[in-house]
View 1: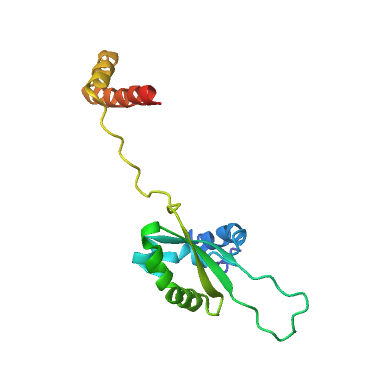
View 2 (view 1 turned 180 degrees about the vertical axis):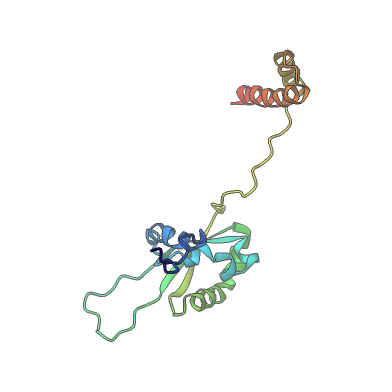
Length: 171
């Protein structure tokens, strides 16, 4: 006799549910207890500040060997990489950033901000379009693809060949 199975939860879950737990070990190497600051940096700092700075690491103070049992721990220092032109502005906004990070985490985690000037290490979301090849490369690629009968394919192969020839000469 057939009996209906009990309802079970679906196995599929959004990928976003797994991102935090996958990044947590990598974030721990930089002193972050969890990846929340890294993942939600734009929401914490605001779009304008997130465009010019990024968190590098969270440095915790060394614990005293004989600290009192009830003593509160000192807060950490958040190290930020900032584009050089915005370092002074970010220095003035450091207390605001500390408040925003602490509000996000729910406790007084960050006590001060250290700035490191330099370019941001972001992966460009849009690939850069290569410059158009010069006419000599196009002519050479056209002679190489002259036997291709399909005009659309011939044109595509000509552009690809010209890009590869230009890359070979420069590189």
